Length: 353
Image 1: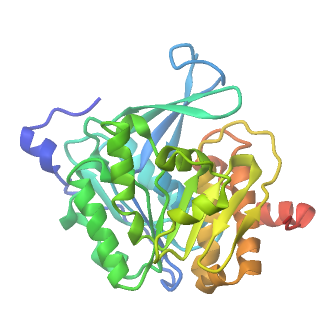
Image 2 (image 1 turned 120 degrees about the vertical axis):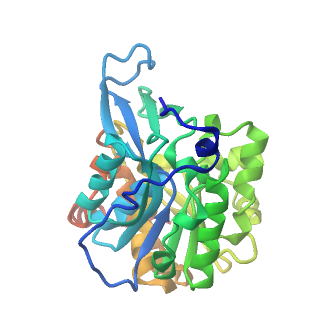
């Protein structure tokens, strides 16, 4: 499902004359969260509990974890930008319009004239959990080059958020590392959600090595309980073992536990905040909504990571964002706004120990 291209284009990618997606929003940059990585189309089955072959039809939905986070922050009233690459095709243009419709800045988006926008087919189990099949051999996001980065945008970031998928192949890996370097040198916090997608990596060992290769550079790390098991083989509820995952420069590490909430770890304190109970329909984007909720709060008040009471409030907010997202199908369409979260928390507001 990729365009015909020369070997040289496969290695390096070709940027379309339409270099980037423009947006008319001009906003204060002090609290800007820049999300770097993949932007793609999720095809979600209209009926859950069936295999891909058995699904009668699929609903097209915009996705890609970093893009989900950017949209989530903007829908909550925050200031977000996306940096990445899509194909110079109908899906690529559609995705850029989705970002703009959600008030995400898109000046960092690039189009590839030869490679297609990535696609993912998602299987929904009866419990709302997912399995993925990807079409990206290579897709445009894999061909993102360092000279295509919007350096001005990266210099304006208060937080740079990213995953690990862009680390799998070159040239996107080098571009990812360069984006981190630029943002860090400009004073941004680095936020890392590995977002493990094992079928995309050459092997499990390669995935572990790749994910851990940038672990010690992040200020904020968010991993799921399943990712803790994958990376360490340890019990994700064991606080002592989780604390060992923190590198010396880490300001905040989070272990999400689905409907049970999340565990948090800082150099000074750690604890647990329970989740909100909902009936999940589709868990796609729940972790991204959690990240969006948390980062929207940290962007406004970076010091909250050092105040346990304020951090717990922020994590309750983030848990609510993740929970609400699971009650509808698709990631970006189901991300909540500020009013929805405020209304829910006003009814259920409590901070269990």
